[in-house]
Image (cartoon, rainbow, N blue to C red):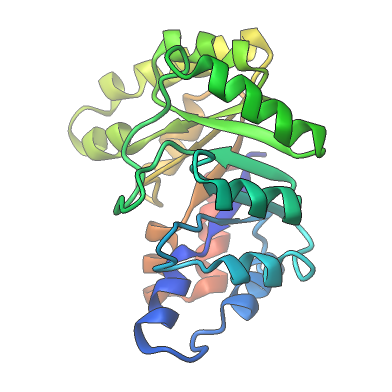
Length: 238
């Protein structure tokens, strides 16, 4: 079964909008695990507009499942954080400093030397590495050269066209996953996956190990409750 990692950035956004500690981010993370999530994902950004760096330190001793920290390793503060906290997985994302949300994967060829060095640094600390990539076969091949353990397929294009041309738009993701598996790379996925499009993606993506879902899942929880929502997402991954 594909693991579900719940991205709790949106919980932090709501908390930060009013100050104080409501909703309680740490409690939500623990509840998400209790309700069946197999991992917790955070993506701290330099402006700390949602997840704060201190949140990452506070979460680490509380979590019982996989802790996945996403971010841009070209930001030294992020690298220092990951090496200090030592999560189970770090997902490398090529975000700009003030980027609203992730919107593209790495060019693993142009950044090959850099990615190889930074991945080696994380792996020496026993941290599993994943590179955020578009479903481009050349980028998958480039990822293999860097020594990364996994890739995370950036799924916004799939989600955007799911209603109108799902059979066509899933094809590059199917091919990317097949190649990654042939090369010995684990396959994760994330960005705009939802209750509507998740099952179809899972069915057409070979050996999908993990999905990281935040915005849609937290939005659904407003209507269905967090426990019910997590169970609904887990059902789509069976």
